[in-house]
Structure formats: C-alpha cells, structure tokens
Image 1: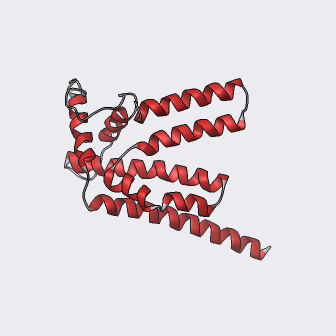
Image 2: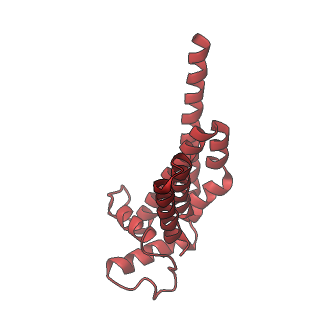
Image 3: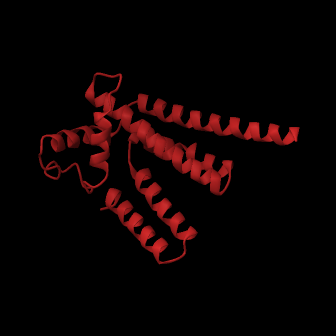
Length: 175
C-alpha cells in the first residue's frame, strides 16, 4: 500500500512540475518579444471595438466567430500592466497556455503522462503559444473534443455533436 501511495505522489508531483514548467516556458518566450500576429491582435481588436471593418486592414483573414471575440473578452479582464498592448499580449499567452494545458490533461488521461508531456513541453507548442501567439490550439482543442465525443457516443447524437464542433473548429481558425 505504501509503494502505491508513493507512486501516486510521484505522478502528481511530475504532473504539477510539467504543468508549471510548460507555463513558465511559454511566459518566458513571451518575454523575448513577439511576432507580427501580436500587433495584429491589438490592431484588429481596436478596429472591432470602434465598429470598423476588420477585413479592410488586410491583417485579419479569420472568421469573427472565435478569436476576435476571445481577444475582446481577454482585453476586458483587468491586468497588472497599464500598457494595453503588453497587457493583451500576456493575457493571450496565458489563455493559449491554458488551452495547451487542457490538451495536455486530456492526452495524459487518455494515453499517459509521457504522451501529454511530449505535446505540452514540445518546443514548437511553446513557441507557437508563447512567442508567436497563434491560436490554432483553440481550434485543435474544440476539434479534439468533438472527436472524443464521437468516440464515446457512436450514434447520431455523437455524430452531430462531433460535426458541429469540427465545424466550429474550422470557423475559428481555418475559414
């Protein structure tokens, strides 16, 4: 019984360590700077807030269904930085890190801590969420959940829910 408890404690400690390390790496990458997308997020959000046409700028080629509304909600959250651009940039990094963490938890639960860690501590995942701030992981999570629903409920309801979530995933990122 004691070895079983020790094994569970080691797994919990490893899980927490990986979770904190992944978040810290993403925030560290965000501290190194940003890509073109980060300035685009702020610019598109400002156009959206002032009722402009986000498609006139040529810097937004996604559906307004997802990302623009998410950035709008993130922008409304009070934050410790007074600079609007930097504040939004860090909030986006934290949000994308949470999405990555949810994917990590799902992969750990379905497969193993090793598989989840390969995704979550992958340098490409860290770079895309922390530095590049691409929101493809939001679409991936929604699509992934749709597939998991279909696998669990292999009936018409599962098929329809899966189809709706995959369609939403495509609307968020791939329109």
